[in-house]
Length: 176
Figure 1 (tube, rainbow, N blue to C red):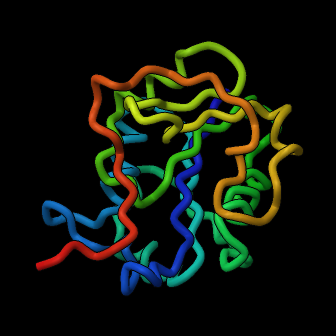
Figure 2: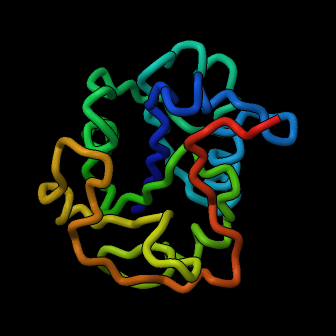
């Protein structure tokens, strides 16, 4: 079985506030990501929150995702990833990882990366490794517990998604 982890624990310091709640087309940014995972048919989804977790969990429609709180979210994305991995049952053989600040995530990219075979694999929109990323259980112990790109050091098979729009990576508040 495959489960999804949506990593959305950061405080949004560079953004100037909780970007998970930032409206895009009238809905919170994080909702767009959760809706894409649901639309791809992933049955088990966990959203990992940290900073302002209570407010975000109340204000963002979760589309069936279960909230996990990463108490050590300030340690970086790797700590957030491990908080989610610890909550997955033994029957989960691999995890699909997406970021909560990729509001243009396409369900087709999720399906394509999931269906691309075995091993660690990542979407490539024409500019190299991106999200979603699928990490098999046998590699979870190889992931560092600190830092911002925990799976980057592990070799991945790139899955061509160049015909799709990249999910984006919103780090700064749009001007205007």
